[in-house]
Image (cartoon, rainbow, N blue to C red; front, side):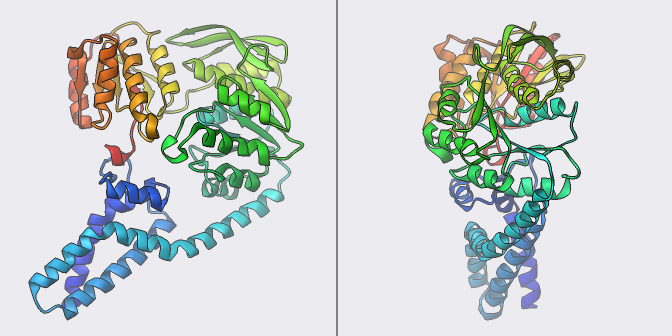
Length: 472
């Protein structure tokens, strides 16, 4: 019976460990980030994401279950009193985060070998393909630029593109092994959480062409300084093929600095008189019209995409498209038919209201742009936001500035996050926003009820940023 009781308790412990395991997965299996979240009780309790039972997670759960069951069996076999057994079980429950860490390190050599095996397999496959390889990185706009570039290049080439946010070593490995076929071009988005992440991805893909999107203060909690972010993003330009070509968005001080540092053949975009830029911009709730200047050629274009940031993404992507011999008319047609990237200034209309879904945003630059888009709409304007996280020492000041920007752009505000509400409110008050028009919601249900009361005909709602489950 002791082993049966141990099994029953194991089932309960696995259930209680679910949120720890989900947090571990959402943290990208980064044990340092997991420990910080577990220590501060910022576990992924929300319903927005669920634990994905990948092969890695199944290996982890099996090993975890074996270790916990062995400990429980020892407790039930050798403990002579039920009170002592209960105390031991409670202790095991308290130690769940440490068991997660233990299993992480037990499996680390195996996971490393598996990772190297698949990366070697992908590298071998990639080496056997005669395709053009393009790497894209930056702080903001990577995915949107990647999707725009795909639409432009698809006018003439067969293109394989890393889907969604497959911008890590294993994400790109999976893309190559499962999606790359007889394609002419591979587009690889490259993400980073620490120094050398982009270097590793660049050495892996060995791109012929590179795009550097806007560079700024993203993930300052892990990078600590803007200089570290700049150096990490520069790794793409530093380790790509030396006879390759780089296209660099210069619409930021960091971008211009990295353009000056770049040693390969390079083209600057998004600044006046650069290789590619936009002028005579007219933005509305239906999209944008502008003159695209491309290597001295002028092209009048229209797009359904909202915001100046998307215009910059279009300009940067078309610059590389033009370098790769895509014709001006094909470029114009591709821009006209572009669809928004989900959750990035995505416009959703119904009979009651317009929704601007910018929930995949997490920085002040993007939020300011989204608020600028909001002002182009008529009707009552409502902003729903939890503010920013993962901003390091700039988190409080960034959320204060967000509040000030919101105050100048909308009629009502719903603040979702306890962590940032005081800073956002202070920013709103600093710009004389009516506090009676500020609402606080701890849950999505509360948010929905408040929104129902505020909604009216021609109402426009901006969802600005969404938080990981561990902040919900």
